[in-house]
Each structure stands twice: as structure tokens, then as C-alpha cells.
Length: 296
Ligand SMILES: NC(=O)c1ccc[n+]([C@@H]2O[C@H](COP(=O)([O-])OP(=O)(O)OC[C@H]3O[C@@H](n4cnc5c(N)ncnc54)[C@H](OP(=O)(O)O)[C@@H]3O)[C@@H](O)[C@H]2O)c1
Image 1 (cartoon, protein in one colour):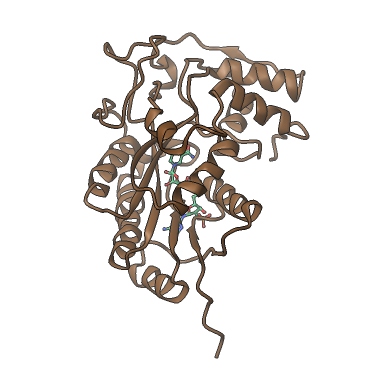
Image 2 (image 1 turned 45 degrees about the vertical axis):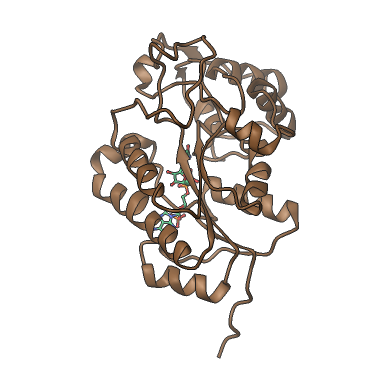
């Protein structure tokens, strides 16, 4: 009979995905925590139960979920799959953790907001966690909002709202990889989550058992054009792009753009290690060793 798994500090779901693989790298680099990454389908409640009872984690990091292929428009033609995985299966993990008094982290979205009269583009007035979402369109966002509301029923959940995540590792879901593939970009100042910088902060937040809803982006705003300019300056001077004309909420891109107020995050974690977003993105570019390839 195979040995029973050892208890671990962290159980990571979705460890092969963009955000989950970054968390596994963060755990490895940090070195303080043991972890396991089971391959169970999180829709399978008994499989998740078995994992929790076998590994007895102190913290669960759930990066398992759907983000759409190639993008969130996919959810318009796959609504039930969206409900099944991004709501029902995620709740399985949260509920089973709650039953065992285990802390769980869920990766939400900051795209629940877009600029409006009270938070106009360029005003510096960001949306606070206490303000209701003002994006009504799109199945992906609707499901994120529904999930947020359901998570309020649980006391064991750290829910972080991520915005246009960018990192130094090429990946189809990395904002930088996406921008490099587009011939024409929409460029509107917006909040962005710099994964390289914020994932170690997130690890500490888990270890401190923080719970509740956090806007999880770097302070300030950045445009896609500025991201590509930084890439051109620090990584590959050969790149070229065109900017599409757009209104304050993206026009042709049909994506929400907004500034999130991250003062709750900064006051909770002290702000050390969290750069203004333009500085954070510049650090990402400086850490890239070779230009991203189309095949990456
Ligand atoms: N990327 C973003 O911009 C963004 C922003 C905010 C929030 N999020 C959310 O964060 C989560 C992860 O996003 P990501 O960008 O890292 O996506 P990703 O690269 O597609 O990774 C998703 C991971 O979840 C796994 N998965 C999917 N369904 C599963 C299931 N039923 N049971 C177990 N594992 C399952 C996938 O496993 P396989 O590899 O086996 O398919 C994959 O490892 C998603 O819920 C997404 O909505 C993403």
C-alpha cells in the first residue's frame, strides 16, 4: 500500500496554470512552507475532501478555474461551464475548507469596475472594496460578482481582486505576452497586478490568515502603450505596435478599465515591497533575460 501523504502547509489547486505556477515558484523561492499540488478536479467534492483529509493543509491556494480561451469572451458561448467551475467548483473548495477550519485564497477579478462619473479617468479616485461593482456586461464578470457575493458567507476566505496580471514569465495569460501578440492595442490608464512583486506579498497574507476582499493591484495606473514602451526600452528595441482609438473604457476592446483603490492592501501589509505600478512594471522588464518568443 502506498504511504499516506505527509501533512503540508499549503495545498495548491491549479498549479500548472499561469497564476498557480507563479505561486508554486513563490513558495519554492520563499522556502518556509511545505506544499503539495494535487491534480484533483475541484468539481469533484469527494476528491477535494480526500485531499484535505490526506494533506491536512493549513492554507489552500485555489488558482484552479477558467479564464477563457483565448479570452473572457469565451464565456459568452460557455456559460454553464463558467458557472460549474468558476462558481460551483470554487465553492466546493471554499466550503470544504470552511468545514475543516482551513484558510483558503481565491483569485477574483478587479474588472468588476470601470471609470464612471464619481471615478473619472485621470482623477485618481479609485474604487474601494466597499463600493458595489459597476460593470454589468459579460458572463465572466457576472460570475465573478456572484462568486464574490457568495464568498461573503464564509469566514475563512482571502479573496484578492486581480487586474490585468503581468509577469516576467511568458504565458498566454500574461498581459505582456498578450500585448506582444497584438498588432493594434487599446491603451487606457488602468490598475495592473504585477505578479512578480505581489505574489510574495500574497504568500505572506495567506500565512497571516488574512481574510476578506482586497483590491490586489499595484498603486497607480499604467497604459498598455507604456508597458510596451518599457519592454522596448529594456528588452527588445525591435517591437512595433499601433494604438487603436478608444474611449475611457476601452472602446473597441470592450474591457473594463478602472483605478482600484489599494489603500486597504497597503495599510494591511505596510506597503513595503509594493511599488507604484510604473516602477513595478519597469522592474519586471529589467528582470527579463531574453525577448519573449511567439512560441513561448
Ligand atoms: N489570468 C487572469 O487575468 C485572471 C485574473 C483574475 C482572476 N483570474 C482567475 O484565476 C484563476 C486562474 O487563472 P489563470 O490565468 O492562472 O488560468 P490558467 O492559466 O488557465 O490556469 C487555470 C488552472 O486551473 C486548472 N483547472 C481548471 N479547471 C479545473 C478543475 N475543474 N479542477 C482542477 N483544476 C482546474 C487548470 O488545469 P489544466 O491545466 O489541467 O486545465 C489550470 O491549471 C481562474 O479562476 C481565473 O478566472 C485570472
